[in-house]
Amino acid sequence: MATEIERKFLVINDLWREHVIISSELKQAYLSTGNNATVRVRVADDRAFLTVKSATVGISRAEYEYGIPVADATAMLQLRQSGAVIEKTRYRVKCGNHVWDLDIFRGENRGLQVAEVELESEDEQFQLPEWVGAEVSGDHRYQNSNLIDHPYSAW
Image (cartoon, rainbow, N blue to C red; front, side, top):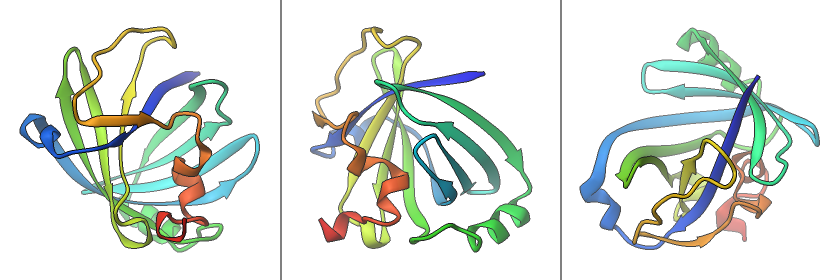
């Protein structure tokens, strides 16, 4: 079992841009959402994935991710449980000993900018970049599975 341990922060300025390693265009939707688990399909440029994530406990959760054909993922995007397809640009940004995922959302979530850092343990120390503000790890409004039915533009 793979465990995802991540902390999530709002992005407060553009100083991250000078540290970008790579970027990709993402489209994702949820085939199932519930209290115990979510099932997500994602197309990232020319690759696609099916991901199952358990409910979050603290900042950790079980995560299972599998590569699938892009054509299958594209068809699955139409099977989504509800809500919109989430579209965003993901930037991989180096800061200290970590590489952060920084998402710039489009569509109904336009204006939302969130950065996540994956950790090896919940108490792992990491450098906090000057381009992040408030931590939103425990705020469920910022989970992608919530943004499909409660987009940022409606807050």
